[in-house]
Length: 141
Image (cartoon, rainbow, N blue to C red; front, side, top):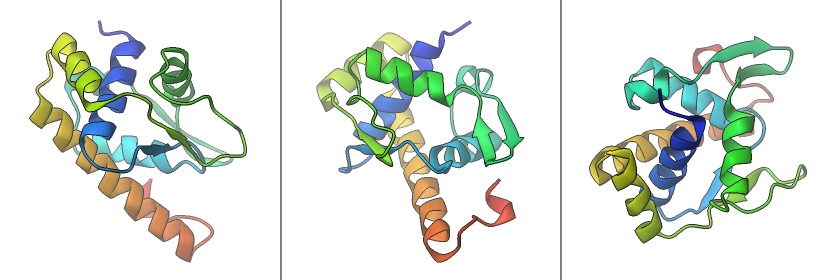
């Protein structure tokens, strides 16, 4: 069984290889909803889907493992140190380091880029709906 660190590495590598923005959202449930969509649409590897669990809480949809993923990323210095007042964290690795992690995970760069672009589209969609409403539409959950 893959460890959460593997999922963390795939998430961060996919994010950095799939676009120019090196900031990944960490608040308001944005990444939670993007990950949920990735699991539902089978846009991520099955070993990632098996590790992620979601609950509806009083503050909305939450990925149970996301705090641990973000903690792993910070501890492994893949991202900047979290600040509770920030809505995102900066990815600190280069594309070269990301490709090395993917090699160790037996994930192709094209698979990672595809997943990263999926996440970015979902993040943008959820962020856009949050800007126009105080709460995202139900179908986003």
